[in-house]
Length: 218
Image (cartoon, rainbow, N blue to C red; front, side):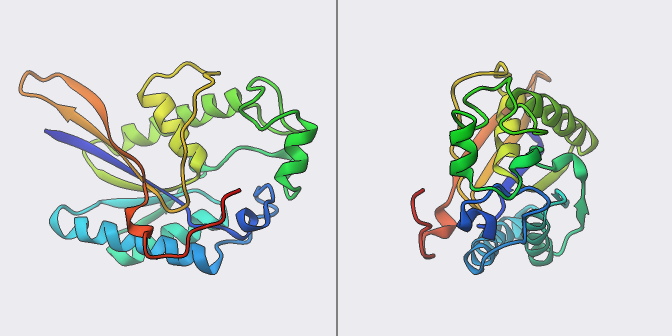
């Protein structure tokens, strides 16, 4: 029996993504036209499920691309939308608004390359972000036990969910792809003996985006 279900929808393409910029709170201006279309397609796909087994709530973090993605999903499903700072992305410090290529060159790699070192002045470390985000996500899961919850999420939140629920050690060199408006689903199962475990039902599912113009490969 599935007792709790967590569906993570990565936000649609944002303008900062299209421009190759670090999209912190000072830089994120929201979704592109393609990003809106991607979020709408994800919402329509979830709406088909919603008719059979309703979702309870949509959560979104504070950055504009998450807010807009969450609004599209919540309006389509006609369920409450809650904004929660615990779903915010990494702190980028002085890198906010700069080209990712320049930031990665200066730091000798992206955030994952040196997980205990900030990638810019005033930024998180990757492991520091994962530790904080895992604690926050654990709280949200506990608060929503027994519900079907949709998260309008950063890709980093998807990675956090996998790190937390698969018990992956911090600093692991392995990673996960996460396309814009992809769907990732975790289910908490309880069997007839009362034994429980989290199971990953799907990761980075983009079937609903097949008719849209593909994003260029970075």
